[in-house]
Amino acid sequence: MKAKIRVHKGDITKLKVDAIVNAANNSLLGGGGVDGAIHRAAGPQLLEYNRKLGGCETGKAKISPGFNLPAKFIIHTVGPVWRGGKYNEAELLKNCYINSLKLAVENGIKSLAFPAISTGVYGYPIEEATRIAVESVNDFLFTNDFIEEVIFVCFDDKTYKVYENVLR
Ligand code: AR6
Image (cartoon, rainbow, N blue to C red; front, top):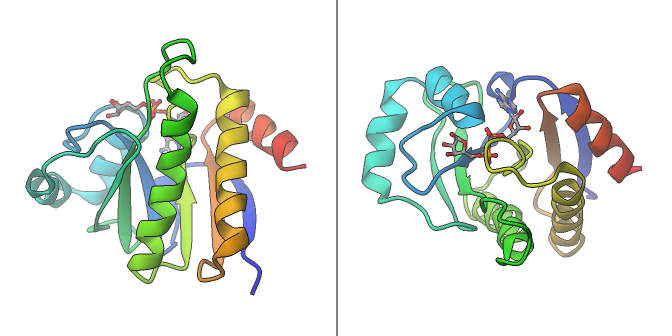
């Protein structure tokens, strides 16, 4: 079966999918932006659980239960901080998508939703980040047919328009 890719405008914490992806930081202990929203919606058990995960390197991914979320799991990945583009940011951002998808397959996850990783506080230019997001997911799905649905969740109009353009 060919996996479906779609764009959704809204709050990722509301989605009833097998897993939502969190744009976390290396501590995995919460923060602002989508990370803060996910911790608030999942409840305090998430912080307790993540304390045992021992953090996460940039570009890698770790999994937790969804706790109070409609999603069953949360895949926490850590995007690169944008430092002008010469510090391996593109490769690290690609790794976030690929490693999240690999972890999803390992855990029997068939539907997952990604936020626009690194494009908020971490400052990654939105057009470039979106191209990497879409290409990485497309490449992965081309060789792996376990995943049935990938949703790119955009929190604001600007991000939504960029995703629509890149996907078209
Ligand atoms: N649902 C979907 N997308 C959201 C939501 C939401 N509820 N809230 C924000 N976004 P950011 P980063 C969008 O800053 O750049 C945290 O403090 C947001 O509009 O959340 O990877 C972490 O702990 C933007 O488009 O993540 C790290 O320290 C996108 O999510 C740091 O921020 C990513 O913005 C990670 O920075």
